[in-house]
Length: 261
Image (cartoon, rainbow, N blue to C red; front, side, top):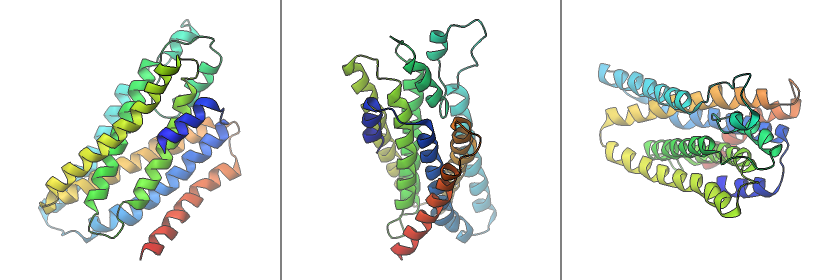
């Protein structure tokens, strides 16, 4: 999904409001995925002290990891006397991919966005890890991880749209390598997540900790990144059809879950 959307955006200009709609859709899917795939096993887990500590520890670890990731990947605000080209070379995750794309479109020969490539690649690795961990963690259920995988595919598809837009004026081979790199890292992260989760699944406490980790990480992704960034990206303060996509995403995920049973 990410590779396809990146290739589309490399050739076509996608309106900002459409990208915001993708973010709302992904947010709705992710919230529903957390509700129907990750939270129920946590509620069904034993209530002993060890399990409770595992839930709290896993939840805190998920928030901590994404907070650190956002801190290290986020660029400082451009100084007033900083040139537009220098500002373009430093880019954080999330919505600023869109700002980066808008700036890149005005540059005749922008520098290679090393910071952006590193941030998106790291983002892809983390999302792949979440897919692998969460899918393996709920593998006892039929078709487990389907909704979560769909939600993260939409989210990374949006990232690919904004990301590829910044690479249009790079040399073709450089742009192609940069577009292909994050999806490859995403796949590797998913494999690593599945292997790690499978290795720890025999320990019930670690299994619960993994579920809590995935739950908090996905909630962070929705509340701190996707929805906040989507609203900042919209040309108008409120666009009804864009905001409606959040509820469409949630409903689609619920319907898919019902159809699996």
